[in-house]
Image 1 (cartoon, rainbow, N blue to C red):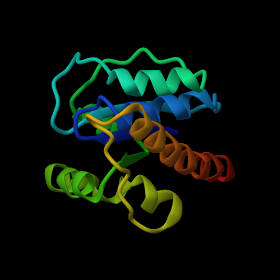
Image 2 (tube, rainbow, N blue to C red; image 1 turned 45 degrees about the vertical axis):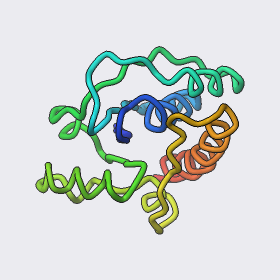
Image 3 (cartoon, one colour; image 1 turned 135 degrees about the vertical axis):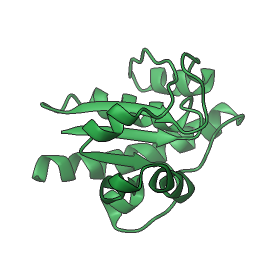
Image 4 (cartoon, rainbow, N blue to C red; image 1 turned 90 degrees about the horizontal axis):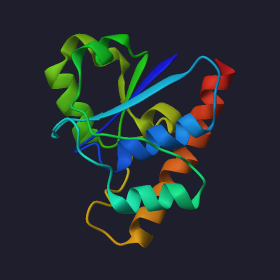
Length: 145
Protein backbone atom coordinates (compact mmCIF):
# COMPACT_ATOMS: atom_id res chain seq x y z
CA UNK A 1 0.00 0.00 0.00
CA UNK A 2 1.15 3.54 -0.75
CA UNK A 3 0.00 6.55 1.27
CA UNK A 4 0.64 10.16 0.29
CA UNK A 5 0.16 12.80 3.02
CA UNK A 6 -0.49 16.37 1.86
CA UNK A 7 -0.48 19.72 3.68
CA UNK A 8 0.31 23.32 2.79
CA UNK A 9 4.08 23.72 2.95
CA UNK A 10 5.30 20.18 3.69
CA UNK A 11 7.32 21.43 6.65
CA UNK A 12 5.09 20.57 9.64
CA UNK A 13 1.97 18.39 9.51
CA UNK A 14 2.41 16.10 6.51
CA UNK A 15 6.08 15.30 7.20
CA UNK A 16 5.24 14.67 10.86
CA UNK A 17 2.45 12.30 9.77
CA UNK A 18 4.85 10.61 7.35
CA UNK A 19 7.53 10.18 10.03
CA UNK A 20 5.06 8.88 12.62
CA UNK A 21 3.61 6.31 10.23
CA UNK A 22 7.04 5.22 8.97
CA UNK A 23 8.16 4.73 12.57
CA UNK A 24 5.44 2.08 12.94
CA UNK A 25 7.38 -0.10 10.45
CA UNK A 26 4.32 -1.61 8.78
CA UNK A 27 5.31 -4.18 6.19
CA UNK A 28 4.57 -3.44 2.54
CA UNK A 29 3.72 0.19 3.27
CA UNK A 30 5.25 3.13 1.41
CA UNK A 31 4.68 6.61 2.81
CA UNK A 32 5.44 9.99 1.26
CA UNK A 33 4.42 13.56 1.92
CA UNK A 34 4.19 16.80 -0.02
CA UNK A 35 2.81 20.31 0.08
CA UNK A 36 0.39 22.09 -2.18
CA UNK A 37 2.11 25.47 -1.78
CA UNK A 38 5.81 24.80 -1.28
CA UNK A 39 9.15 24.55 -2.99
CA UNK A 40 11.24 21.44 -3.29
CA UNK A 41 14.15 21.07 -0.88
CA UNK A 42 13.01 23.08 2.14
CA UNK A 43 13.76 21.98 5.70
CA UNK A 44 11.28 20.60 8.17
CA UNK A 45 10.24 23.07 10.85
CA UNK A 46 12.74 22.98 13.75
CA UNK A 47 9.91 22.50 16.25
CA UNK A 48 8.46 19.61 14.22
CA UNK A 49 11.91 17.96 14.21
CA UNK A 50 12.29 18.55 17.96
CA UNK A 51 8.92 16.97 18.78
CA UNK A 52 9.68 13.94 16.61
CA UNK A 53 13.04 13.55 18.38
CA UNK A 54 11.28 13.73 21.76
CA UNK A 55 9.37 10.62 20.67
CA UNK A 56 12.43 8.84 19.30
CA UNK A 57 11.34 9.25 15.69
CA UNK A 58 14.06 9.81 13.14
CA UNK A 59 13.42 11.81 10.00
CA UNK A 60 15.39 12.95 6.99
CA UNK A 61 12.96 15.31 5.32
CA UNK A 62 13.09 17.89 2.57
CA UNK A 63 9.91 19.54 1.40
CA UNK A 64 8.45 18.64 -1.95
CA UNK A 65 5.58 19.84 -4.06
CA UNK A 66 2.65 17.58 -4.88
CA UNK A 67 3.80 15.29 -7.68
CA UNK A 68 1.45 13.85 -10.31
CA UNK A 69 3.38 10.55 -10.43
CA UNK A 70 3.08 10.07 -6.67
CA UNK A 71 -0.60 10.99 -6.84
CA UNK A 72 -1.13 8.29 -9.45
CA UNK A 73 0.90 5.68 -7.55
CA UNK A 74 -0.75 6.28 -4.19
CA UNK A 75 -3.54 4.02 -3.06
CA UNK A 76 -4.81 6.82 -0.86
CA UNK A 77 -4.01 10.53 -0.59
CA UNK A 78 -4.61 11.94 2.88
CA UNK A 79 -4.79 15.67 3.46
CA UNK A 80 -4.53 17.60 6.69
CA UNK A 81 -7.53 19.87 5.97
CA UNK A 82 -10.69 19.91 3.89
CA UNK A 83 -9.25 22.91 2.00
CA UNK A 84 -6.26 20.77 0.96
CA UNK A 85 -8.62 18.01 -0.12
CA UNK A 86 -10.77 20.36 -2.20
CA UNK A 87 -7.68 21.90 -3.84
CA UNK A 88 -6.35 18.47 -4.82
CA UNK A 89 -9.72 17.37 -6.19
CA UNK A 90 -9.79 20.56 -8.27
CA UNK A 91 -6.23 19.95 -9.58
CA UNK A 92 -6.63 16.19 -10.02
CA UNK A 93 -10.36 15.47 -10.56
CA UNK A 94 -9.55 12.09 -12.08
CA UNK A 95 -8.19 10.99 -8.68
CA UNK A 96 -11.01 12.33 -6.50
CA UNK A 97 -11.99 8.80 -5.43
CA UNK A 98 -8.73 8.35 -3.49
CA UNK A 99 -8.37 11.81 -1.91
CA UNK A 100 -9.62 12.19 1.68
CA UNK A 101 -8.84 14.22 4.75
CA UNK A 102 -6.94 12.09 7.26
CA UNK A 103 -9.82 12.31 9.74
CA UNK A 104 -12.44 11.42 7.13
CA UNK A 105 -10.48 8.36 6.07
CA UNK A 106 -9.92 7.01 9.59
CA UNK A 107 -12.94 8.35 11.51
CA UNK A 108 -15.58 8.99 8.84
CA UNK A 109 -15.80 12.68 9.74
CA UNK A 110 -13.80 15.63 8.52
CA UNK A 111 -11.93 17.66 11.09
CA UNK A 112 -8.84 19.61 10.15
CA UNK A 113 -5.47 18.88 11.74
CA UNK A 114 -4.43 22.09 13.47
CA UNK A 115 -1.57 23.95 11.80
CA UNK A 116 1.31 24.52 14.23
CA UNK A 117 3.29 26.67 11.79
CA UNK A 118 5.03 29.48 13.67
CA UNK A 119 3.79 28.21 17.03
CA UNK A 120 5.62 27.27 20.18
CA UNK A 121 7.02 23.81 20.83
CA UNK A 122 3.89 23.12 22.90
CA UNK A 123 1.68 23.85 19.87
CA UNK A 124 3.75 21.35 17.86
CA UNK A 125 3.37 18.79 20.66
CA UNK A 126 -0.41 19.18 20.48
CA UNK A 127 -0.34 18.68 16.71
CA UNK A 128 1.89 15.63 17.17
CA UNK A 129 -0.62 14.12 19.62
CA UNK A 130 -3.49 14.88 17.25
CA UNK A 131 -1.62 13.21 14.39
CA UNK A 132 -0.57 10.24 16.53
CA UNK A 133 -4.18 9.45 17.41
CA UNK A 134 -5.20 9.58 13.76
CA UNK A 135 -2.18 7.48 12.76
CA UNK A 136 -3.19 4.91 15.41
CA UNK A 137 -6.58 4.62 13.71
CA UNK A 138 -4.95 4.57 10.27
CA UNK A 139 -2.58 1.79 11.32
CA UNK A 140 -5.50 -0.27 12.60
CA UNK A 141 -7.38 0.27 9.33
CA UNK A 142 -4.35 -0.69 7.22
CA UNK A 143 -3.73 -3.86 9.21
CA UNK A 144 -7.39 -4.90 9.00
CA UNK A 145 -7.46 -4.61 5.20
